[in-house]
Length: 69
Image: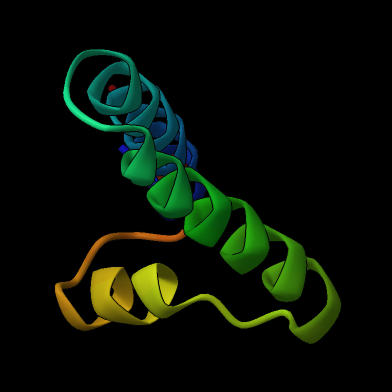
């Protein structure tokens, strides 16, 4: 899986998880939803995301290799 696919997967999972927690546990979990949204918004303007930095350090490839299968 590539870097940007993992980023979208994690962001979507965090939003859905925090919405479920807000519904079943406490509405305060909506602050986590807001944090994820604000992080996505700031990364659109600054072109920097903490998760991408961590994934790059972990060795996740940015693109899929176009080599033979």
